[in-house]
Image (cartoon, rainbow, N blue to C red; front, side, top):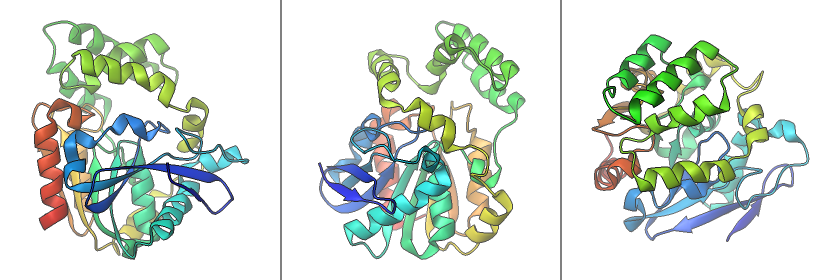
Length: 284
Protein backbone atom coordinates (compact mmCIF):
# COMPACT_ATOMS: atom_id res chain seq x y z
CA UNK A 1 0.00 0.00 0.00
CA UNK A 2 1.78 3.20 -1.15
CA UNK A 3 1.94 6.12 1.26
CA UNK A 4 3.00 9.74 0.76
CA UNK A 5 3.26 12.78 3.02
CA UNK A 6 1.08 15.78 2.26
CA UNK A 7 1.56 19.49 3.00
CA UNK A 8 0.92 19.35 6.77
CA UNK A 9 2.85 16.17 7.48
CA UNK A 10 -0.19 13.85 7.37
CA UNK A 11 0.56 10.48 5.76
CA UNK A 12 -1.98 9.59 3.09
CA UNK A 13 -2.45 6.20 1.44
CA UNK A 14 -3.73 5.13 -1.93
CA UNK A 15 -4.51 1.79 -3.54
CA UNK A 16 -3.52 0.92 -7.10
CA UNK A 17 -5.72 -1.35 -9.22
CA UNK A 18 -5.10 -2.50 -12.79
CA UNK A 19 -2.60 -1.61 -15.49
CA UNK A 20 -2.32 1.19 -17.98
CA UNK A 21 -2.46 4.99 -17.88
CA UNK A 22 -3.09 6.26 -14.35
CA UNK A 23 -6.51 7.56 -13.34
CA UNK A 24 -6.61 9.36 -9.99
CA UNK A 25 -9.89 8.49 -8.24
CA UNK A 26 -11.37 10.64 -5.48
CA UNK A 27 -14.04 8.97 -3.30
CA UNK A 28 -17.21 10.64 -2.09
CA UNK A 29 -19.29 9.89 0.97
CA UNK A 30 -18.45 12.50 1.97
CA UNK A 31 -15.27 11.14 3.55
CA UNK A 32 -15.74 7.46 2.75
CA UNK A 33 -12.78 5.13 2.30
CA UNK A 34 -11.95 4.49 -1.34
CA UNK A 35 -12.61 0.73 -1.15
CA UNK A 36 -16.32 1.30 -1.92
CA UNK A 37 -15.31 2.26 -5.46
CA UNK A 38 -14.03 -1.27 -6.09
CA UNK A 39 -12.55 -1.46 -9.58
CA UNK A 40 -15.23 0.91 -10.91
CA UNK A 41 -17.06 -1.70 -12.90
CA UNK A 42 -13.94 -3.14 -14.49
CA UNK A 43 -12.43 0.19 -15.49
CA UNK A 44 -9.15 -1.19 -14.14
CA UNK A 45 -8.93 -3.45 -17.21
CA UNK A 46 -7.45 -0.57 -19.18
CA UNK A 47 -6.42 1.92 -16.50
CA UNK A 48 -4.24 1.96 -13.42
CA UNK A 49 -6.69 3.24 -10.85
CA UNK A 50 -5.08 5.36 -8.13
CA UNK A 51 -7.70 5.18 -5.38
CA UNK A 52 -6.91 7.86 -2.80
CA UNK A 53 -8.00 7.45 0.81
CA UNK A 54 -8.77 11.00 1.88
CA UNK A 55 -7.25 12.13 5.17
CA UNK A 56 -8.78 10.32 8.11
CA UNK A 57 -10.35 7.59 5.97
CA UNK A 58 -9.34 4.07 5.01
CA UNK A 59 -5.59 3.57 5.43
CA UNK A 60 -4.75 7.29 5.56
CA UNK A 61 -3.78 8.91 8.84
CA UNK A 62 -5.99 11.38 10.65
CA UNK A 63 -4.63 14.94 10.63
CA UNK A 64 -3.55 16.71 13.79
CA UNK A 65 -5.88 19.57 12.92
CA UNK A 66 -9.43 18.35 12.28
CA UNK A 67 -10.36 21.61 10.55
CA UNK A 68 -8.31 20.35 7.58
CA UNK A 69 -11.08 17.87 6.82
CA UNK A 70 -12.78 20.82 5.14
CA UNK A 71 -12.75 20.21 1.42
CA UNK A 72 -10.86 23.36 0.40
CA UNK A 73 -7.92 22.29 2.59
CA UNK A 74 -7.83 18.91 0.85
CA UNK A 75 -7.04 20.49 -2.52
CA UNK A 76 -3.41 20.52 -1.40
CA UNK A 77 -3.62 16.75 -0.75
CA UNK A 78 -4.56 16.14 -4.38
CA UNK A 79 -1.67 18.30 -5.54
CA UNK A 80 0.70 16.42 -3.22
CA UNK A 81 -0.50 13.14 -4.75
CA UNK A 82 0.15 14.45 -8.27
CA UNK A 83 3.69 15.43 -7.31
CA UNK A 84 4.24 12.07 -5.61
CA UNK A 85 3.13 10.26 -8.78
CA UNK A 86 5.39 12.44 -10.93
CA UNK A 87 2.59 13.44 -13.31
CA UNK A 88 2.71 16.69 -15.26
CA UNK A 89 -1.01 16.38 -16.05
CA UNK A 90 -3.41 13.72 -14.85
CA UNK A 91 -6.79 12.24 -15.56
CA UNK A 92 -9.12 12.46 -12.56
CA UNK A 93 -12.38 10.71 -11.65
CA UNK A 94 -14.42 11.98 -8.71
CA UNK A 95 -17.61 10.50 -7.32
CA UNK A 96 -20.46 12.29 -5.56
CA UNK A 97 -19.22 14.71 -2.85
CA UNK A 98 -15.65 14.39 -4.12
CA UNK A 99 -16.72 16.27 -7.25
CA UNK A 100 -16.48 19.39 -5.08
CA UNK A 101 -12.86 18.55 -4.29
CA UNK A 102 -12.15 17.96 -7.98
CA UNK A 103 -13.81 21.25 -8.98
CA UNK A 104 -11.83 23.20 -6.39
CA UNK A 105 -8.64 21.48 -7.55
CA UNK A 106 -9.40 22.30 -11.20
CA UNK A 107 -10.05 25.92 -10.22
CA UNK A 108 -6.75 26.15 -8.34
CA UNK A 109 -4.63 24.11 -10.76
CA UNK A 110 -6.38 24.28 -14.16
CA UNK A 111 -3.28 23.22 -16.04
CA UNK A 112 -2.85 19.96 -14.12
CA UNK A 113 -5.93 18.01 -15.27
CA UNK A 114 -6.11 16.56 -18.75
CA UNK A 115 -9.54 14.91 -18.55
CA UNK A 116 -12.00 14.98 -15.66
CA UNK A 117 -14.87 12.56 -14.99
CA UNK A 118 -17.49 13.65 -12.46
CA UNK A 119 -19.72 10.71 -11.55
CA UNK A 120 -23.15 11.55 -10.06
CA UNK A 121 -21.59 14.73 -8.65
CA UNK A 122 -22.83 17.08 -6.00
CA UNK A 123 -21.89 20.61 -6.99
CA UNK A 124 -22.00 22.72 -3.84
CA UNK A 125 -18.72 24.34 -4.91
CA UNK A 126 -20.53 26.13 -7.74
CA UNK A 127 -23.90 26.45 -5.97
CA UNK A 128 -25.79 23.97 -8.11
CA UNK A 129 -28.34 21.47 -6.87
CA UNK A 130 -31.88 20.27 -7.48
CA UNK A 131 -34.90 21.68 -5.70
CA UNK A 132 -36.83 19.30 -3.44
CA UNK A 133 -39.55 19.11 -6.07
CA UNK A 134 -37.05 18.13 -8.78
CA UNK A 135 -35.49 15.41 -6.64
CA UNK A 136 -38.84 14.04 -5.56
CA UNK A 137 -40.08 13.90 -9.14
CA UNK A 138 -37.20 11.57 -10.03
CA UNK A 139 -37.49 9.22 -7.07
CA UNK A 140 -41.28 9.05 -7.26
CA UNK A 141 -40.92 7.57 -10.74
CA UNK A 142 -39.94 4.33 -8.95
CA UNK A 143 -43.14 4.13 -6.91
CA UNK A 144 -45.47 1.15 -7.05
CA UNK A 145 -43.57 -1.61 -5.27
CA UNK A 146 -41.38 -2.30 -2.29
CA UNK A 147 -38.83 -1.48 -1.12
CA UNK A 148 -39.16 1.69 -3.16
CA UNK A 149 -42.46 2.91 -1.69
CA UNK A 150 -41.02 2.83 1.82
CA UNK A 151 -37.80 4.46 0.59
CA UNK A 152 -39.69 7.23 -1.21
CA UNK A 153 -41.74 8.01 1.91
CA UNK A 154 -38.48 8.27 3.89
CA UNK A 155 -36.94 10.46 1.19
CA UNK A 156 -39.90 12.82 1.39
CA UNK A 157 -39.46 13.09 5.16
CA UNK A 158 -35.75 13.82 4.71
CA UNK A 159 -36.53 16.89 2.65
CA UNK A 160 -39.11 18.05 5.19
CA UNK A 161 -36.67 17.51 8.07
CA UNK A 162 -34.08 19.77 6.46
CA UNK A 163 -30.87 19.64 8.46
CA UNK A 164 -32.15 17.23 11.11
CA UNK A 165 -33.21 13.97 9.42
CA UNK A 166 -33.61 10.81 11.44
CA UNK A 167 -30.95 8.08 10.96
CA UNK A 168 -33.75 5.61 10.25
CA UNK A 169 -35.15 7.66 7.38
CA UNK A 170 -31.67 8.25 5.98
CA UNK A 171 -31.06 4.50 5.96
CA UNK A 172 -34.43 3.68 4.38
CA UNK A 173 -33.99 6.31 1.67
CA UNK A 174 -30.57 4.96 0.67
CA UNK A 175 -32.31 2.15 -1.23
CA UNK A 176 -32.93 4.81 -3.89
CA UNK A 177 -29.18 5.28 -4.38
CA UNK A 178 -29.08 1.97 -6.24
CA UNK A 179 -30.63 1.26 -9.61
CA UNK A 180 -31.03 -2.38 -8.59
CA UNK A 181 -31.76 -3.36 -5.00
CA UNK A 182 -30.04 -6.73 -4.81
CA UNK A 183 -27.62 -8.54 -2.51
CA UNK A 184 -24.68 -6.62 -3.92
CA UNK A 185 -26.39 -3.30 -3.27
CA UNK A 186 -27.31 -4.36 0.27
CA UNK A 187 -23.71 -5.30 1.03
CA UNK A 188 -22.41 -2.08 -0.51
CA UNK A 189 -24.77 0.00 1.62
CA UNK A 190 -24.01 -1.92 4.82
CA UNK A 191 -20.27 -1.41 4.34
CA UNK A 192 -20.73 2.34 4.28
CA UNK A 193 -21.29 2.48 8.03
CA UNK A 194 -17.72 1.28 8.59
CA UNK A 195 -16.05 3.05 5.68
CA UNK A 196 -17.20 6.62 6.37
CA UNK A 197 -15.56 9.01 8.82
CA UNK A 198 -18.70 10.69 10.12
CA UNK A 199 -16.89 13.37 12.13
CA UNK A 200 -14.82 14.33 9.08
CA UNK A 201 -17.93 14.37 6.90
CA UNK A 202 -19.49 17.00 9.15
CA UNK A 203 -16.50 19.28 8.54
CA UNK A 204 -16.10 18.55 4.81
CA UNK A 205 -18.59 21.15 3.53
CA UNK A 206 -18.58 23.35 6.62
CA UNK A 207 -18.69 27.15 6.80
CA UNK A 208 -16.11 28.79 4.59
CA UNK A 209 -15.52 25.77 2.39
CA UNK A 210 -17.01 27.30 -0.75
CA UNK A 211 -16.99 30.59 -2.64
CA UNK A 212 -19.17 29.70 -5.66
CA UNK A 213 -18.74 32.98 -7.62
CA UNK A 214 -14.95 32.79 -7.32
CA UNK A 215 -14.90 29.10 -8.23
CA UNK A 216 -17.14 29.62 -11.25
CA UNK A 217 -14.87 32.43 -12.47
CA UNK A 218 -11.73 30.33 -11.95
CA UNK A 219 -13.21 27.34 -13.79
CA UNK A 220 -13.56 29.45 -16.93
CA UNK A 221 -9.78 29.07 -17.23
CA UNK A 222 -9.97 25.29 -16.99
CA UNK A 223 -9.36 23.81 -20.45
CA UNK A 224 -9.45 20.12 -19.54
CA UNK A 225 -12.24 18.09 -21.08
CA UNK A 226 -14.92 17.09 -18.56
CA UNK A 227 -17.55 14.34 -18.61
CA UNK A 228 -20.37 14.78 -16.10
CA UNK A 229 -22.10 11.42 -15.77
CA UNK A 230 -25.58 11.26 -14.24
CA UNK A 231 -27.71 8.29 -13.29
CA UNK A 232 -31.17 8.27 -14.85
CA UNK A 233 -32.75 7.33 -11.49
CA UNK A 234 -30.59 9.51 -9.23
CA UNK A 235 -32.54 12.09 -7.25
CA UNK A 236 -29.46 13.98 -6.07
CA UNK A 237 -27.96 15.13 -8.32
CA UNK A 238 -30.53 15.01 -11.08
CA UNK A 239 -29.86 14.75 -14.80
CA UNK A 240 -30.66 18.46 -15.11
CA UNK A 241 -28.05 19.39 -12.49
CA UNK A 242 -25.43 17.31 -14.29
CA UNK A 243 -26.19 19.11 -17.55
CA UNK A 244 -26.03 22.50 -15.84
CA UNK A 245 -22.67 21.65 -14.29
CA UNK A 246 -21.27 20.56 -17.65
CA UNK A 247 -22.50 23.86 -19.08
CA UNK A 248 -20.36 25.82 -16.60
CA UNK A 249 -17.16 24.20 -17.85
CA UNK A 250 -15.59 25.40 -21.11
CA UNK A 251 -15.11 21.84 -22.42
CA UNK A 252 -17.80 20.07 -20.44
CA UNK A 253 -20.27 17.48 -21.67
CA UNK A 254 -22.86 15.40 -19.83
CA UNK A 255 -24.29 11.95 -20.33
CA UNK A 256 -26.92 9.81 -18.63
CA UNK A 257 -26.54 6.15 -17.72
CA UNK A 258 -29.90 4.40 -18.25
CA UNK A 259 -31.35 2.59 -15.26
CA UNK A 260 -28.59 3.79 -12.95
CA UNK A 261 -28.76 5.73 -9.71
CA UNK A 262 -25.98 7.12 -7.50
CA UNK A 263 -23.48 4.25 -7.90
CA UNK A 264 -23.71 3.58 -11.65
CA UNK A 265 -20.78 1.15 -11.84
CA UNK A 266 -22.82 -1.24 -9.70
CA UNK A 267 -25.98 -0.90 -11.79
CA UNK A 268 -24.40 -1.67 -15.17
CA UNK A 269 -20.67 -2.19 -14.93
CA UNK A 270 -20.11 -2.78 -18.65
CA UNK A 271 -21.96 0.38 -19.71
CA UNK A 272 -20.19 2.49 -17.11
CA UNK A 273 -16.67 1.26 -17.80
CA UNK A 274 -17.07 1.49 -21.57
CA UNK A 275 -18.43 5.05 -21.41
CA UNK A 276 -15.73 6.33 -19.10
CA UNK A 277 -12.94 4.56 -21.00
CA UNK A 278 -14.19 5.98 -24.30
CA UNK A 279 -14.11 9.49 -22.86
CA UNK A 280 -10.65 9.07 -21.37
CA UNK A 281 -9.33 7.71 -24.66
CA UNK A 282 -10.99 9.97 -27.21
CA UNK A 283 -12.54 12.84 -25.24
CA UNK A 284 -16.02 14.21 -25.62
